[in-house]
Image (cartoon, rainbow, N blue to C red):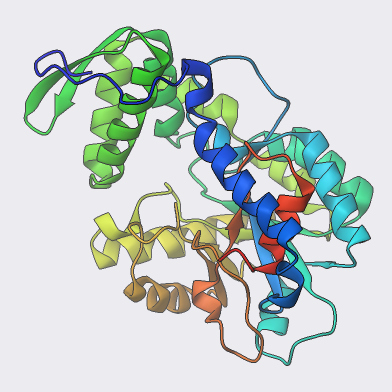
Length: 354
């Protein structure tokens, strides 16, 4: 991959078009086996689950789709809601999750639907499905994106790698060069560069992605605006009482890479902007990216100081009743968009695969 240091060939002779789906297939197989094994129904855990989605849009062609695991189709979302109703799950708001998390378990399990990233898909694909079913859902808003100044660096990185066969950029203090003629090499480079960028402080990350986009004629600002909801879209959604808005900072930074004062400011300013723009209280928060590398325990105290009553992560898990799950560190199940099995979904909801 790196022209200055030859990389050995991949050990497995996977075809390019199957590389990105291999992990999804193995996960799906594990969940299917758990379903047919029959142990799921004896090992149900917790009171319910918060589901996390990012993009909801029709399938699109292309071998290089590094973010495919974050996507589902509108048809699959519709199937999911129908299945949840058939399985007798209560589909509840995030406010109701907080209530059930501190009370004794109900006889009926619950599911809460949440969406990250304020993609235009929420208005174009999500809302038509969920409004037809009349079920509540939550959208976590990083306010720089509806303001039109957010930087969706992960989309820009995908665009650059997709269109180029050779890429050069500054990594640290060194100019690095990467040859990526094959889809497999593009996936490998995306994994490397996205991991590196997420390790940077916000200002350094912004400089790195702007440098890359300038070199390869990708309009970062336009790409970010085209993918994101604006405030008019959000105002339309806000007219429906079944829609809850949560905060997700202003710029969607990795909080662990920031000084405490800056991280707290991101939380409080994001909350204040949404409340002013949509004229409603914002009581819930999502840690940007939300995994174990992106935030720390101290950020729970910051979220409380900022005025949030709950905060969701991307740690997989179920909600335990009677106060056993901290409201400021709520787990969520991220549905892998490469899986299309309702049986696999049911295993995840039972919490038996954790």
